[in-house]
Amino acid sequence: MIKLNFKIIAVLTVFTLMSCAGEKKKEIASSDASLEEETSKLTIEKPQLTFGFIKLTDMAPLAIAKEKGFFEEEGLFVSVEAQSNWKNVLDRVIDGQLDGSHMLAGQPIAAGAGFGRQAELVTPFSMDLNGNGITVSNDVWSKMKSNVPKGEDGKPIHPISADALKPVIESYKNDGKAFKMGMVFPVSTHNYEIRYWLAAAGINPGMYSKDNIQGQIDADVLLSVTPPPQMPATLEAGTIYGYCVGEPWNQQAVFKGIGVPVVTNYDIWKNNPEKVFVMTKKFVEQYPNTATAVTKALIRAGKWLDTPGNRPEAVKILSMPEYVGADEVVLANSMTGTFEFEKGDKREMPDFNVFYRHDATYPFYSDGIWFLTQMRRWGQIPDSKPAAWYDKTIKDIYRPDIWKKAAKLLVDEGHLEASELPKTDGYKPATTDFIDGNKYDAKDPIGYINSFGIGNKENTEGVSSIEK
Image (cartoon, rainbow, N blue to C red; front, side, top):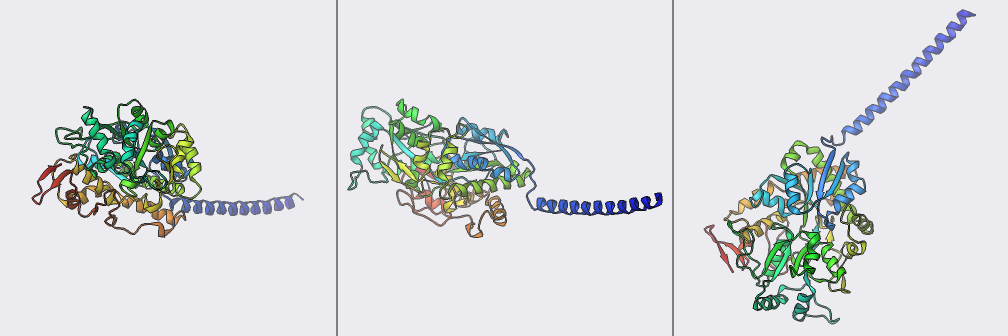
């Protein structure tokens, strides 16, 4: 009887061991499959990241990538922190206090071209198109209005040229008052857009030189720097008479009844690039997979923002105090496809804020070269440069190779269609989509600079002169 029990126990033991071995094999197989799946993804070198931004609606891709979990799905744990001004943003990225940031398109370009603080910065992702406006005080608008053509409905015909502002500036000058306007930073899109708008009407916005970096040499309008959130209060105080800024600070002037937007940057340069996401060259070289993963999450955020029906939710997210913190009604004025000029004059403007359509996220060399031409035009780049310099300089800063790697991974994962990737050499075709109809060909930067009546002009010997 005892021997029989031992036999039964022995048999049961064998079956148990065989069963355990089978389960172990299943576990190993499952583990191998999991490992295979894991290794097909990017190995993140630095998962904990801190990014900066300024309180503007065009920081939206950062907020959406965080709130919708796109960063987390890439294995990234991101803190997003508001910064006080654009100089602080630049300094903190260069010094390594921020791993990357929402930044003015001109900032990494100026840092690489030698204007202001110099550093090796990289742009793998363009955050948006359009999104800015030029607003004037109620008093200035009341003086401009009679110079603006009206439609059959009695409303001003847009776009409004700075020709309507010219006699107002003259009247201030005759009264012994300088005409002062604000922009957000010397190398901001806003500075170049307000200069472009003024100069197209023959108004000199002032020049820079090696010895004078105020940008007010021979100026008919004195432009100065004001941080975006402070624009409405500065206008209301009468310190400036108008400004160029991103949203929601034009619509805030309308909401508060202190000013009137007169033109948007969509009308100054249709579908112009606005903000970019920037990291240091050192960061992307040290953490290449992390840089790609960040770019993947931001591309997904841009696509989500331009997917019909998502903007109302985006407005709610941006209204949160940790992001833009403005009233939802103010944010919705521009973020949901409309824009309000004079109070009550709300117009359809579906492309005022673009985050994905028109290849908005791709860092085109031609977009970057436009900024270089304007830096040269206004004297921030004081010396003549050959045409090849523009191409070489921008290719050190704009990195479509990182964007392409990120986008192809998103195609493989089913988040993008292959047809959504632009077929390009990095240069957009020449365009005349500017308020003055002037032609811009990024492959002929010297010819473009020479096409303007106001600003630096290059002669055939490569020596510069200033024409007014």
